[in-house]
Amino acid sequence: MLKETIRQLVSGTEKMSMAMGGQPQLAGISAAEQKALLGELNNKNEKNSGYAFLWN
Amino acid sequence: MKDSIPLIEQKMRELVQQWFTAEPLVHFTELFIAEKVRESLKFGQMTIVHFRMFGGTGDHVHQAAAAVELFILASDILDDLQDQDAPAKAWMKAPQAVSIHVASSLLTLSQQAMLDCSMDNDIRVALMEMMNRQLLLAANGQMNDIMNEITDESTYLEMVKQKSAALLVFACMTGVMLAGQPWNQTVAEYAIEVGVAAQLQNDLQDLLRWDDKSDFLQRKLTLLTLYLLEGEAEEDRWINDYFQGRLSLEEAMLSRERFQEACERTGAILYGSVMSRLHYNRFEELLGTIQEASPWKATFLQIINEEIA
Image (cartoon, rainbow over all chains, first blue to last red; front, side, top):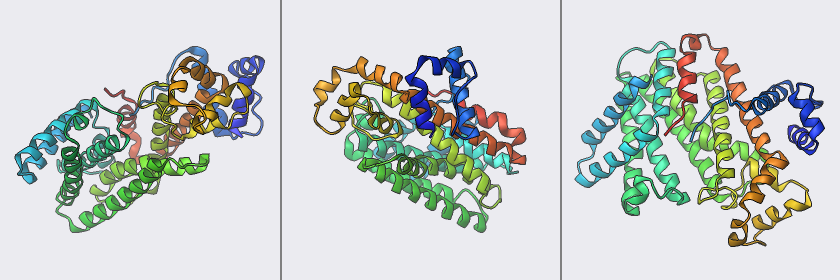
């Protein structure tokens, strides 16, 4: 379901803007998925990777 | 925790001097250890932090950390030999027979080092049993990765749990058990979560690069290439064609910008980032439930998040 939500989000500029503004249409995904998605969208919005997790 | 790196390195070298008597074996192993130290010794540091976290005292933990890192080095060498995609590494520049031999010798050396790191027989047996169980799990996962026959997301994540996460469980649990504690299920679970998160970060990097390590050019099935292949847009049909062999490598090589645009447009990059963060968040959540972790949390997170060379 997370996958479908992301496909829907990227398919429309309006949906993505709403999500990045903190008003996402996130029905059907778990609270943990929602937290992760909003965390990543927030990073994208701020062009800032606070989540600097790197491992090779 | 960074001050433990020279101690782990020193112990790795001492073990080589103690058990390897053939001069070329010593020479090449030391060369490979030097390369490994330049990259990172995160697994060994995790062993030490878990040892301290669970009440362990004493310097013998450096030998256990060295045993862990000797295994990780062997596993890195074998992985690069299998993938043939890291020509700059010291073990890829050495004759292949030599690198195979050093790697297989290191596997045994790591076992010997682990066996000798405690005088307590109960701890030794528990450690060895755990070590072998985790390494066999990793061996199964690595084989499935080599075969590249993943069919869906859950199979992929299961393979990652075996291939990558089992080694993190091994590193963390070595510290826990050397401190005299039994297997800790929460530690095992958060080590798996951080292992999956790390692998997904690697997958993101390998999706976008355009060289021998490119997952796309190598037609490697990962969570992210599976996501792309499941896409239904007509304009991205060529990606499926390439994976099915209907498009050649030479033709695909010309489409770098088109591929990167597809990764962005379809949400493949966002999906990978979100999935990685999902597992990382779960790791942090589990870590927060361990009371012993509290004073060590910042150190542990620093090891994990530190960028490596």
